[in-house]
Amino acid sequence: MTGHARFLAGRIGGGELAEVRVRVTAAGFQERDLPWAGRYGENGTHEEPELFRRLLDLATEAAGRSFTLVNFRWRRLRPGDYSLQVDDRDWPRSGADTEVLLDLSERSSEEAEVVWALELQPPWFVMPQRSGGVAVVVREPGVFRYERYLTCRMREREIVRLYLALASKGGA
Image (cartoon, rainbow, N blue to C red; front, side):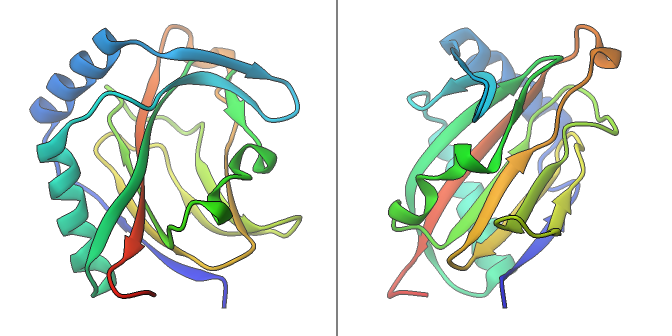
């Protein structure tokens, strides 16, 4: 088994997403451009405690167990941005066993899907880029994540996502 995942739609309203997106954008993103790993903006310091709590509750509901927050990252993709499996290399050392992803983008697209797969294997879970979409992914060793390319067809569009790394209380 490689883990299991659930996609939850419509759990967080568009108005709330917009408010959080404005705050995290105002906090800023550090640009990352490593051709072998990924290109995107990232913020690992802006906290949204109420949103984090709600996502922890969703993870508990979806996975049937309680979690603690290990760390978080906000990510912004613009046309041409992506991340590769090698960019996910710190996951096994994080102590986390479950990941929650929230898409805070203004609009949905058919691009920049998030993919979880065993290294060098076909994907076992693909999350479409859907504004307000939440994925809860229980990751076993050897499962990596990457984000597909956001093409120039998206013009000025930005994709904003929040990743939470969670550890099961009392172990997996």
